[in-house]
Image 1 (cartoon, each protein chain N blue to C red):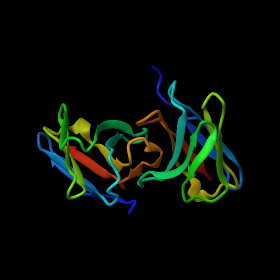
Image 2 (cartoon, each protein chain N blue to C red; image 1 turned 45 degrees about the vertical axis):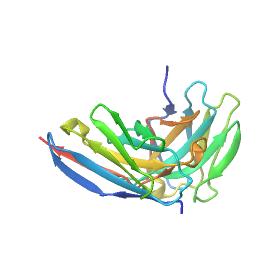
Image 3 (cartoon, rainbow over the protein chains, first blue to last red; image 1 turned 60 degrees about the vertical axis):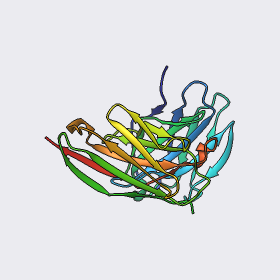
Length: 109
Length: 113
């Protein structure tokens, strides 16, 4: 069974640009979670989607947004990129327990 | 009341030794306690999890000990190996509400050969 997949693996953007990150959950999982992990730091919860709806949101500005599609895949959008947005962005999916993908490394220059 | 406090922040253990990482939670409604293992540049992987109907769960060299009255749980890694060197995260939530999984800040484990 395939795990959680994320694309792209790496993304390099310039300050002020927009970034779009994608996540495909494990088959049968309806919930998708997004986390930000800055270098050397822990997991900061960003967003939780379930059945196409945003269920919870972490303490991040509105320029972090996303959506979940009918096939339960999800997209994270970060607008007006800032240097401190550089981080590993992790997606997880769950039916009960959360399983993480490999992450997308976003670098903002 | 939603915090999970994890200690130590970093840990150095000799090969063959026992690694112990501790976590404490505040919300008495929490009844699901997983541990995740993360290697550099990779996503966290679910290592082992416990529900409070048992006080201990063992999987290979990894054991979770749970103390409900103290609101604490810990991860023990027996016969630690260099390949165990990674960052370990504890977490807690209500079973069925894993969308509200609260993570500790992580412990960086280094196992010296």
